[in-house]
Image (cartoon, rainbow, N blue to C red; front, side, top):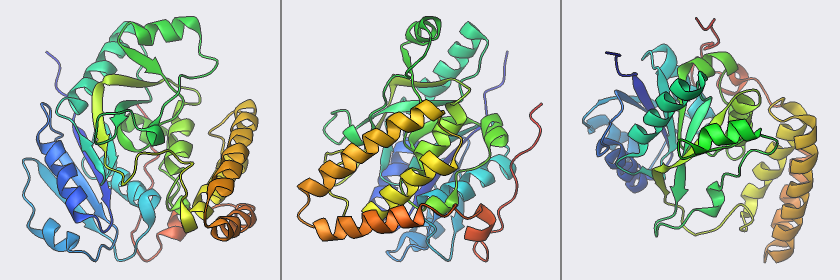
Length: 318
């Protein structure tokens, strides 16, 4: 007999109490619940902290309340570090506070990880759930495309298990072995919001295997059904700056991928601005994002100084 892996869920929240309650209820209703949940509260002001002080779920809940909103990127850096170093996780299950994992989400991801390892001798760098909107349609914001350049053998190995080999995923129900976090480090906190998940998952999968499976499902409770081309308003700044950082400051993508991704981003940005009723806002975000993207992102220690004493998760993997 083999022991069950120790799984820690990490949820980052900010001023979305009702959605957070839905997320925690989804986690608690699973056919396999995690062994612990780390909730990182990004200095919420809507009653979230009060709720979390009295919350008692079916598994151990570790609440980290920050005194400053450091965005999803900073929150996941804190939560993943805590899951690995304080809770000794074998796997870390990551999600935002607008994620509602369906009952079999975690179990199916764990089953796939085990089956793929037994079938190929390789442990997947991460497994991403199928992400759907509230009406069950595949969410375009979380669309995961098959990995370009994957070998026929690699595709077949995944397909035999009902999975698809992918290159990146959003932080909406992603299962990552703790060994991968120790190997690749943490998300870059200075991204704040957007594309931190692209950079991190692409970093993990560049020389490894990443899979998605339709058997594991999570609902993404966004306000509208749309992709990244929807008018983001002032947040367009983060889309531009962070993509520039991914393409110029990160080793997550191969050179040929950077060329393709840059071309796709330029097309998407052009379409988004052209379709917007607030072009001045988006143009301001574009120019500011391009300007700030020329500077390298700050280290996690700099971003979190005085907020959270982040420790180094990079340790030799036995």
